[in-house]
Length: 368
Image 1 (spheres, rainbow, N blue to C red):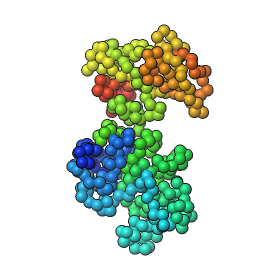
Image 2 (image 1 turned 120 degrees about the vertical axis):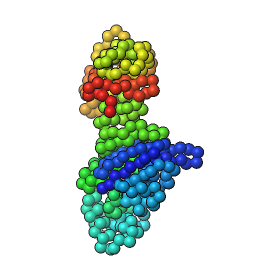
Image 3 (image 1 turned 180 degrees about the vertical axis):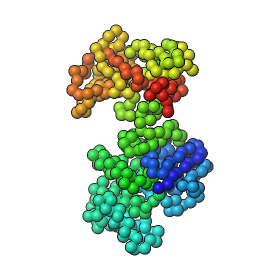
Image 4 (image 1 turned 90 degrees about the vertical axis):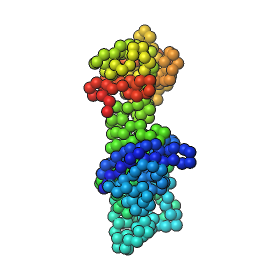
């Protein structure tokens, strides 16, 4: 196990600045997931750690050693790619042994490590097969085994599950989590799938346009997003956002007017904002409740998605703004076309200023 430290890391391709002053600390045994939209720089950042791309400026440390100029084989990292990258003419055994042989390990060490890794990944019965005779999940396990057999200090995963079907992704997520708990390796994992990030990581790094938007545990990012971008990216279905106007602010909280819902007393500190300022109100689908309509509190149900134990109800405001989503238990009495009112659990709300930064909240909702 070892740590990784990034200090003011930058990567420029020609005139395009991809990675911008990234500061990040990854501790021994951490499972860190880089997540963000396409083009945010997460795979580039992983390749900088691996040594597959050169660093334009800044410093990268693995343990206490600066590795900016070290080739990949001297960094103590093992990498698993999205495309598996297996040699089609080699058996599973030879694919897993390839890196060890390249490092000139003796035959006994090669066999010992390959067999140990094969047992861990339940590949013992497949060692004589070639990749074309394997399923997608088996190929992914072989790719993992090839990286793990070298006993690297750090395991790097670049969207390893994106080519698998939904049920196999769930199975492989559990496999990767189990292996991490067994081995205690430091893992850096890239994905665009925030469900993978939430279920695997003990620390999530949200990237946006080459910069770190927020770092924290899955719970931190879900419960206490620092910006509207993080709030919208983490969580499925997405957080609901509505325009709000500040009516009053005081030490213990504030009052806002949310069109279609009315006046709400919130626990957020808005004393740096002015009365009448336009803010953004946010609430997750599970913290909205449907009621009978009353006065201006009136929304139309335009769709209901049934998911077995729960439903997603899509609501259209009178003003024609973006649809809102309510997550509730199934079955329910609600029907498409019905008009309903909304009530809000104000202890689980979010408020963002004109710069899309979260306003701090008192008590358990305080910003991280």
